Picture 1: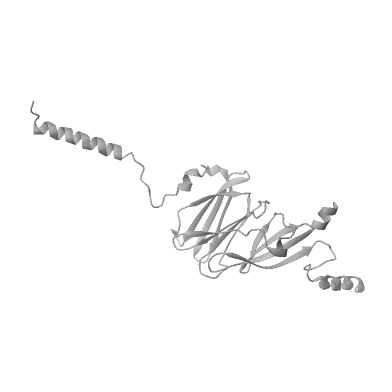
Picture 2 (picture 1 turned 90 degrees about the vertical axis):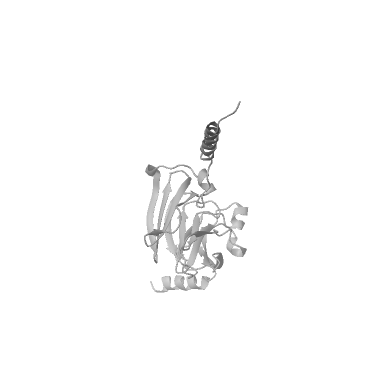
Length: 236
């Protein structure tokens, strides 16, 4: 049996249409797609637990968190003027946000965003990023302080920005008192960090505070407190 050219043309057209329809259902990867986005929990606008906008030079940042559990979702948007510099950034954080601060600690013209939370676990409570024209770089949080600065460390960090330094303060315990089963004197330690040109936090000065009301200043400078105590009684 001879098949007409018109019939063959119809069959070919039908096959092309079917292949096109199948191909249209394939997922297409986008340059801006982020595999991690698929694992981020869906959040509702009514779940907002923190909402703040801050500026740094020509940059503007909006930070929102969603949820009230220990683990929650943070949404970060970065703008330069009216232009958005990155796609909205979503990340999981631990704890409630206590403050959001911007700065340029290393003076390279790229603003940094610091998010502080009330997470009391060791080496927790800080999320930081450095932003550029069309992107961002996470800043690794400090680990357990090295050397004598880490003696008695057990978490419960609080952070703040002072000048061009990140200041970290945490309570410390006395190993001697713990071994003796007594209650150690309440003390805290402060450690300063600078941000180097590569965006790495570098530990600097550290000092310890004593909670004794007659003890003023740093533990490594007790003469200051003795002078203050002498003045307290001699001037009365």
